[in-house]
Amino acid sequence: MKNLSVKLGLIFFLIIFTLELFLFFFLHSSLVESRVEEELFALQSRGDAHRDTLKTSFEADTIEHVALMEKEANTDVMVTNLKGSVLASSLSIDLKKIISSGMKLQNGVVENDWKNQPYIVTVSSIPNQGYVFMFQNTDSIQTLIDRLNNHFFITGLITAILTIVIIILLSIALVRPLNKMKEATIQIKSGDFSISLPDIGNDELGKLAKTINLLASELMHLKEERSQFLATISHELRTPLTYLKGYADIVQRKNLSIEERDKYLSIIQEEAKRINTLVEDLFELAKIDQYGFEMKKQTIQLSEFIAHLHHKFEPAFLHQSMRLHVEMPQKDINVNIDSARVEQMLYNLLDNSLKYSQTATETTLKIWTNTKDLYLRIIDNGSGIQEKDLPHIFKRFYRGTYSNDSGKGGSGLGLSIVKELVNAHNGEITVISNSKTGTTFTIMLKGAVLNEKDTFSR
Image (spheres, rainbow, N blue to C red):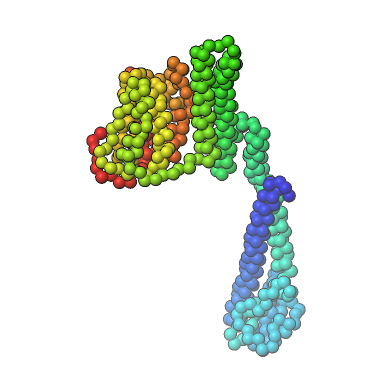
């Protein structure tokens, strides 16, 4: 039994058939017992009616009349005196076969074993005079029970057939969507993600179908991203490698002057640096995708950390006749962060400010806290980011219109790395930008502040 429909159908059938069999047996037994009790009650009532007649006239003529009446009925009667001698009877039977010696006769049932005895018997006592015994042949009860058994058999057979049909239909209804899902997963396995399972409701099967559709959609998206990624990487590497090969061939010429040779070697060096930066960014993202960030948070003194960053980055700004201004609280604040990762975030954002800001402008690094959250804001007066590019700047390899200006465009990985680093710190990053006032990046690191001895007004 390899098919799920066969297994489910067989299990359902066994369960339902067992339940129906139990119910039929219980109902049959109840009906039979109820029917036999009705027959005994009717027999007792008939005997009581004869007793009431004989109470007023316990004479031979009345007794014979009672016996004669029962010969025309489906029941039989036997009238005895107190000693058990038969005074009149509508059937030939030895009463001793019914009544054992010493039996104390009272109104009620004398024999009710309709399965094994030829008669069921009741007795009605005539005070101080005798007894009226009523008999009913059990053949009539057996016939009635046989008819009842036939009805139950036919009903059970019809019920079993209907049960099998219903189970088959239910199994088909259940297994059909499962088969479609199996075919869909086979398609996904073969690389075809263009599957679309129909909406079959909000039950477990419906939710499973929606999950498979979502999985196929995600895999299709990943496939497209992988293709785009490979195409972008090929393009990003092809250009500098072409420069490297071309200028390396030129440098090998013997008739070049020292000035030309130094010029071409400088270009080779710049392109090699560009490839190295791209590879480092790719390696960083590969670590994120495969292992996630290995966070190494530690408690540090915020003012010392920011002073170190300012000392490290300020020369690069001064080299381009720009100023890096820092605003932060005056008192000591301890924070729990991965200092290397936070430095990497700020490096990428400050590097963008250097690339896209004009000389003699100022970039501000503003730090403040709000209860337990740490805020870092970088404000520059650069060329800004176009509005249509803002929703996409944190996507990998996305480079806006400004990226091609004056050869300043990067690989499109820096901001995506910043986004991943912020997420790893359980933080958020937002950006506001326009061409007139420049760009402002705000980073919120949730729960990074451990203690704060003083606050300041922003």
